[in-house]
Image 1 (cartoon, helix red, strand yellow):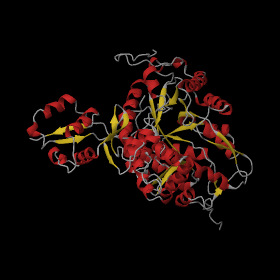
Image 2 (cartoon, one colour):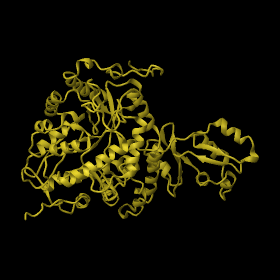
Image 3 (tube, one colour):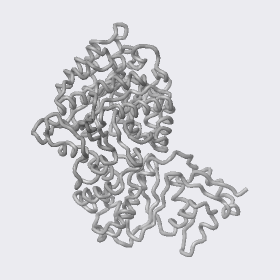
Image 4 (spheres, chains in turn cyan, green):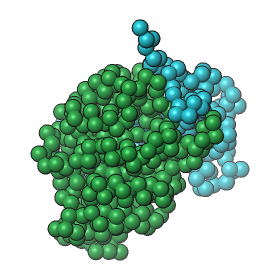
Length: 256
Length: 321
């Protein structure tokens, strides 16, 4: 009996793809008898380089903060540990911020994970579901009856992410967009952000800490009165104006 | 031009644009604004399905506006038809929704695998061409066509390795898949050329061995040059440069046999100005016109070189009719 030719399994192929220390899988052939390992490396390279490029697209400021070479080395490790779970690359990188927070070699940049959260929120905002935006007039009508305000519930647009960080990530991000000088970034400057799609752009708006807490509570479905009952001083009018100005309110519910 | 599954009894499966010479381009984000504002000298656009599997936002709206003015080809890269596990049902559902929304004239995927164990690798990985793979690929193609109610055009991939276990060559394998499933083929002429160089084969013979009537779309692209461990040429399908002369001549030979098959210029890296790609599309169109059916020698008005905005819509500033 002729022994069956080795047929590499797809799981073996994948293990070798993601771990360059492993040899190429068995059963590969080349027309000219050359070592298939070098040809297999083309696949290895395609996978890693394309996924690292996808991360670089999503996290440009993280990349600038650590430098291109460090980013590539770091992203390679992430790709090998957490390859995409879906062919929809717009979703890739959801776990990158948490991974960065545990990544020892970047521990000297403690704000890196929050910057990744901000950049990831921008991509999510860009592709988030469409929803109605309540116009200033509709909202003015609701505001006209102050007695009904405390029980009202505000539904924020699906593209909205509210970020709160102990670090000045908003100013740092803005500085990397050419909206300020890097030397000007003061650690006490804005640490919280409202990220959403506004006029087709993934927009980052600096907000006070109290506003971030208010918006968080509104997202959780608390009525306005309860959401605004904060220990720290809150400018409720200014906070609502910020939401209205950026089309962040999709619905105003009740009270009946 | 949208066609349903099962395929029409016409020999070309209704996929060929009625004998007109159609040359298309991939829709690039860097070109979308220009395309929507000023039009483009193309007969159809192609998009990667996975880029539009998002909940909302500008991508979907832009594609809707493009679809109002041009026929659309939806090209999947994530289905993993050659995967040894079951097809991803969530992904099939996303594809079904996309096809329903955008009603493409053509839908294509690859003879390759790209997922395993719940992970996706963003590359088209190679398959041994044997009976076990054939059975699996045919089962998956059947499932896709019945789930999506749309004919699938299966694309011949670029490969960098072969398998000792293969018992068929790629053309034999594709013939069998077409015969058993009734799917069509997307002939990537660049991939045919790349594989012939990479595996010491004959690209013209490969194309001549394909079932001509099944070929519903052609892709043309550029490759990068590398060398293998023996110092022989190893070509990398990188979609990062203009179509090579050798591929243009192979394309001329192929169209002489296949007739005017709708042809796409693929460019995914180092994307140049739209005009540069329009010029490549025009070159493909000129080749196709030599073989266009006499009654279709002039493309129908809605497929004319510069597609005008719909008549009931106000012309955007700077629109060229």
